Image (cartoon, rainbow, N blue to C red; front, top):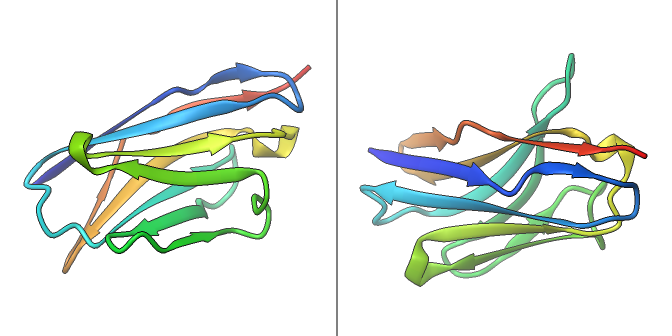
Length: 115
């Protein structure tokens, strides 16, 4: 079993920055990839960014050039640095881990971008 805990969300003005963290614990060996998703009220959950065990990254078009995903393997933690935030980035952000054949989700952290 894998447990994921997100932190770092909050209220920020448009153009501001936040850094989200996701700490993994439990049976964390052989996790193939870590991802960030987000879900706004009344909307579907959507992919934001991913990082694999080999260090490859991938981003949704809506966040390319603004968000950066990274990891600290010693602390079993993945980060999402969010810059130039827009109101449409407002959502609950969820951490996701995959280890065949299972998927694991954190509880989410709220990000609100508003003036």
